[in-house]
Amino acid sequence: MYLPRSAVCTCPTLAELMHRRPLDQFVFAISPVYLSAVEDDILAGIPALRNADQQLKIATSQAYNGALRRWVTCSHAGMLEMLNTNFTALNISLAGMLIDKIVATDSGPGNFQGEQMHV
Image (cartoon, rainbow, N blue to C red):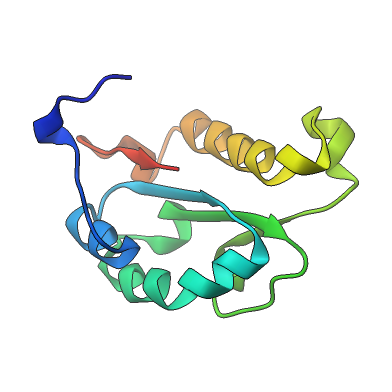
């Protein structure tokens, strides 16, 4: 999808992006180590979201046990066959499944006009 340069939001932090786009969906496919590194940034942006439980999805492995756990869907080896993937792409494939579920939902934040998804 092509977005004109004027439509692209450049933000130095995830929190700022979430504050500028409070109706958007945010999906992260991220390692537990990197998630821990950006945890405070994401937590700072959550209050800006209209309904964070529906707008924020994080795909990572079971090794993560931090403050964002509420929004985490954990990947595991048992998902490899179901997602038709390998360990290298497991979190990305899981995030893709989460996006498919969001797109298929008929109600909730997915129907807000002007909404975009940040992956």
